[in-house]
Length: 454
Image (cartoon, rainbow, N blue to C red; front, side):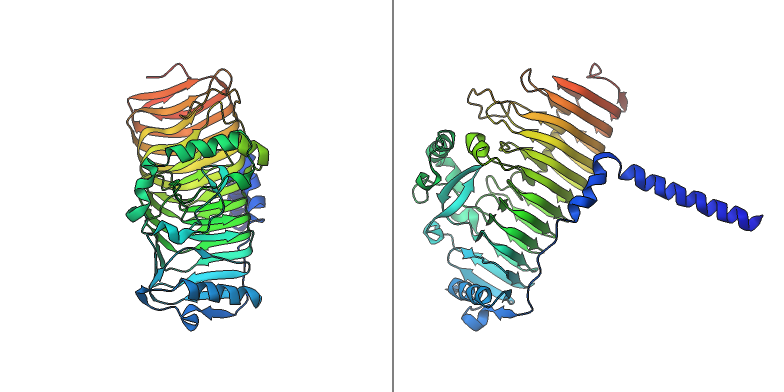
């Protein structure tokens, strides 16, 4: 009898574990393992190309860029491998352009100091600037239509962006207006030429039209603009990176019109959105029509800014999974933003197990009237969004906001197991169809309907 009882007990434990696993991965979350199967970091041949063998020097008065580019070219021509930057301080007078089958590996103790002269980032390349294609200054590390490409190692990248580029945002207005109008008017991309005199800052790291991308372990400081920006890429892994960069528009990682993306174990201390998921702006985004889809974000820490979807999402965003993240202080914890110019869609978005200390404007905020609206009538479709298991200590405005417009309603929104310890107001919600509020607690009070707003 005792043996049978023990076996029965073990069997019940097994059933309980199976049930827990089943519940954990039920619904949309059950699809995440299938997405992970398609995200495989690239591997490289064993060949190593030490940049000091090509003339690079541990000397910040000496330009090591030509040596690094020569090592990258040799590595690529010989079938691929690792371009190694050993310990030391290296001055880089311009952009580093990566090539297929090359892993640029910056070892711990190595530091790349990038030039502060804007002219060093010419000639221009095809890029995207806030969701619109154009020719502009080269991102500091750039890869165009590469397959199997990586930036790895525990070394440091210092963009020195504050020296020259941080003040450019005050001068960029005419160029921004011109570029956006070009996108609206479908001006051919080859005519959208900017660069010198236009003050559109380059990104720090951009992979453009690449397949099988890995960014891992590096430490990044003082970017001129967006920091890690994969565009039109498939199979992207970004992980184990520390970013400390607080210049204007210093988004941490912005996957744009990418498929199969894993962002994990990141530490963000940035001047704008920690992670911002994008897919193109207005007519330019519709012309290309490439969504950002199958994105997994997990185990990330946000010191100042957190997670945003938008506002440049005209190509659509779908199948996003965010879990196990920590936020110290931010404006919005989980922020969805669009307007009636933008079009596109947000669908099948899932977030869970997020711990936040302070979210000034809200721990969850759906905003369908984001600034910059020009008077269009192209509603963004919001549907099938579930946010659950969220804890926040303090909100200084409205804890949970979900504000659709009559012409841009929100559909099938589920907020479950959310606790905000302190907030002036609990919820503010309009034009939401099929809203589920399940176990919502604000200021110690359980909220069960839209009417309980205080």
